[in-house]
Image 1 (cartoon, one colour):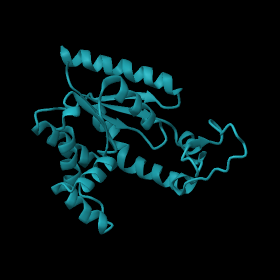
Image 2: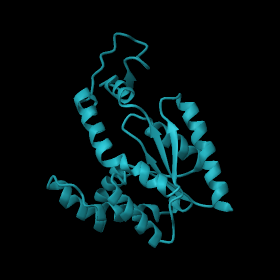
Image 3: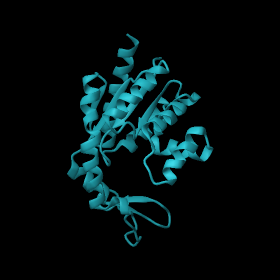
Length: 218
């Protein structure tokens, strides 16, 4: 079977995390979130991890070359032999160019870029309604998933405030949204409506991936 080397795109709150968990289970692909693998590399004190830590300790952004190196190390592991689902990188066209070239130098190539989209107002409503039970860490939503016990005292994370969400969306539109055209021009983009029910989004993504697999085998 051909590799499934996928990139997950979309604004915060579009449902990428939900779908990544399902795709990991469906296809046995590791969900590679760049923040997680950076922290893992730092903890393991790899050469790249130590380099990344110097920037992180200084409060600076980790250079793209370091992040790309950490990604290449991660996708070289056994569980990514048949493919991977990359989330959180690239964030810009320049990063996409660098990452694509680096992956191709390993003899692999991207299979597709999965875009889960949702309008800003939908994203804002989803995120600012999130609440956490500080005792258990359980996550709820004031509109879509309130706790059964109305007396439970919930808190909102600072990251879930409307001002913070709209700032993150502005950064997404400016820096990351151009990747939509970038991957579309290369025939890699597949679009999904993140406003639909999660089960429907999941079904559409599965169907698209099955098509990608068939095309790759021709």
